Length: 133
Ligand SMILES: [Zn+2]
View (tube, rainbow, N blue to C red):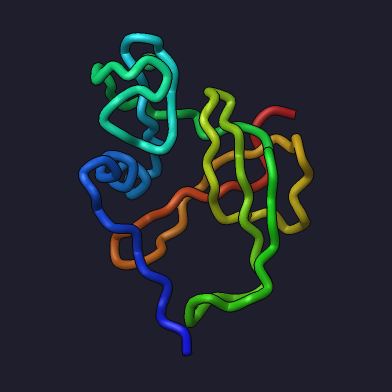
């Protein structure tokens, strides 16, 4: 028996990212001390542990770092198979999201973000071919 895919919880660390996605913006945490973007969101920079962190709107471009195809239906309503991709953003962090491309991803392929409504007013970033050539 499968349950519907749960929507992401609105933990305080994730609200800016989720609200940005609903506006069509990829909001990523950034450290004001070392100027590096990081992922996942958290109260401190993972490089220098400062709490002087904020958010930036990332252009949402990067390259395929890895990918996997799921054949098992873990949640009711999921269409299988589906592809999940790990993207290395041009700004540095890795994001793991759904793949939107019509063909299999290629390691190193340029990608661009888009946003999919996953539930009532809940939007999630996903990636497909795009960005720089
Ligand atoms: Zn830092």
